[in-house]
Length: 87
Image 1: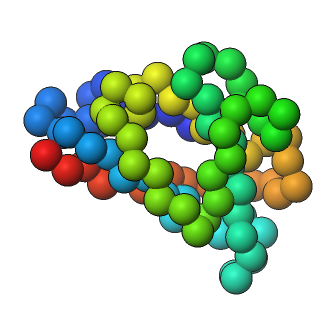
Image 2: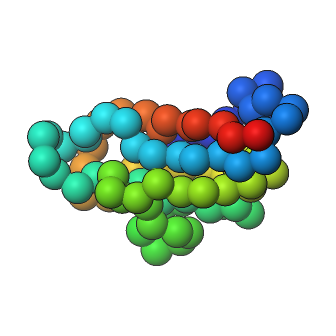
């Protein structure tokens, strides 16, 4: 599970851009991560789907409450999210 703490988001940030930065299953494979905003566990039958071909554009408030996970799912292994902050 991955979350972002409030200290990771600069106070002047207006928009956050999130993307998956590592291949989980191998080069060229589309990776999938699920995310929620309500504190529940993200999984294929609960939450929203993000793939390695998507860049999410979210408010800092949404990022602070979001939870991200690739488990359970088709792929195993760690994943990293990249967050770019725009003011």
